[in-house]
Image 1 (cartoon, rainbow, N blue to C red):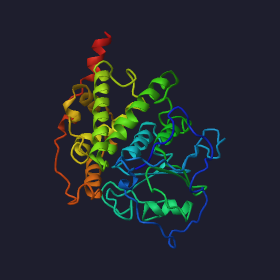
Image 2 (image 1 turned 90 degrees about the vertical axis):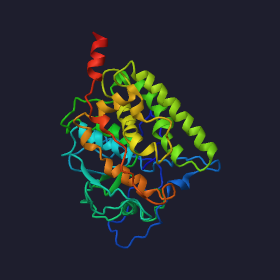
Image 3 (image 1 turned 135 degrees about the vertical axis):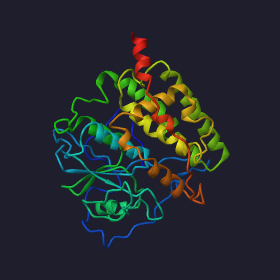
Image 4 (image 1 turned 120 degrees about the vertical axis):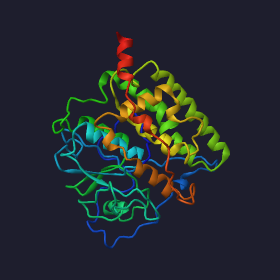
Length: 353
């Protein structure tokens, strides 16, 4: 997964000074790499999980002024179906209608000491661009000395043989606006100018306390660190629940970036975070408004096909052996509430009437 170390009100365009330049060898056969680093290696002395920042921060622009012009069949997206950060980019690619413009590879759900792999199983798509077997080999193509985090999503430039960006919050902004001349749904704007301040406000609240908050619970190594993260998580869920009792989506009657960013955490909450990450005060299903909100987003025709509960559960329970040493993947929970009739549209139509 990836870090989110940028301020939501600024999009970094052009090259950024960072570890790993967008230059490198085209061969993976002679490269060596460090053993995959566990997320639990990112804990501070208080036992708090501190997410590492993303490294590659270039930006694709419609006019090409960044050096990365929006062009068809030039870029390739690497994701995991398990990862909530990568899931954001997958949803945007689908909603904007960019499937024929930006290629896709999907890693295996299991992550061991080698990190993400392209071992084939149901739901995976091999690396048809660089023909790598491991995700870390793609990072080493860019910089043979790279020893940082190997994360998804990754947006790859096939022409420059470079990683453009591995920060999900920036990739979705590119997909939202820079490819409109090539998108099947160019009119869809998930970050419209008149709502940007409100979207940024929700992002600033939800990212540290919910999106990253579940990880701060799950990867905490002291009781103090866990307790603090747990309290902030459920206080923020209560705040969002209260708001959604009066608003169909976070910013009114239309789906925005803020909803997609929240959804990819909430859809994983009951099947994974309640048990695996000890976020067990309430399930999302227990919240009247949040459960209906997740149901409506889940049933969206461009969102439901992007959700893979097998990959989600098998990754978390199977890969985090320091949290789940037996690697047993639970058969539950019952998530049938997600397929129940959606009533929020009618509910808020009546309110407006």
